[in-house]
Image 1 (cartoon, helix red, strand yellow):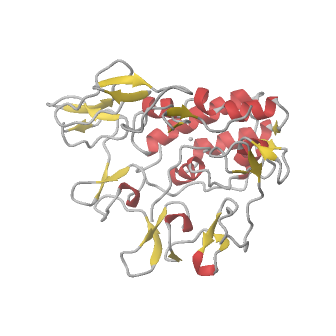
Image 2 (cartoon, rainbow, N blue to C red):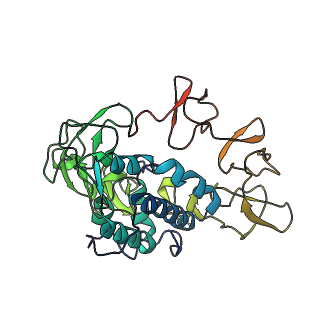
Length: 346
């Protein structure tokens, strides 16, 4: 019933039509025939830079806002270190094909990448781990299965092979990408469901669909809603839309669009910059003011709002608090009053 928008591995150059257009290339099978960057570092940089740009367009948000969240400097350590330490190999052919996928994929396929649930073969094969099942690991990148079970919450963790179609997932073991734990099939791993199929959770449905309970006691996979569609939370709406005050989905205003201050109608990382004849502009950066203006909320770019001023995200081991949220770097969490990445490649 809630859709996961994890900021994990999981985002490019062209915008996705209409913000929620699920048409266009799907996950794909991958060919491995692309010509990719020579080094894994260059590949990772291009991957996250491209994904951030494309996702900003899909969500009708600030490019600078998403570039900060998905900055390669924050995202590439595990991938680069796993290859450097010999725990993984890099394939430039698959890397090039993955980057091509990122450039052309639909917004929903990109969302699948961000959630870490995409079965796109090239993106999974660009960096291939060597660790066999039961081998100790620090990140997904070092496991042959692509799954370091427990990381980053447990360190070190263990390489585990995800369950294939028909596997018993009642114990909580994860299904392979592209499958979900289907309660209606005795808790076995099954392909994610098409429109109108019975479901329990959003994760049961194919990308772009949600588990809709409006038709009765059982949910059914239905398209996420666009302008005028009924909603209770933003997750009910298509990418680029949000659940408005009237409990209907409304298209967000993108950068440069006209807006009315106080309506908070601009996309993520943007705000309506003037009380008269306003347009959506980037939010404040570090050392700039972040208090609301004319009823407009202002999200910091590259940091968090501390006593009315944007402050840079706190680095590893810095003292933090969970209120307000978002004080640590996007790849870390505030645990026992300290920012921690919990587990990463040594």
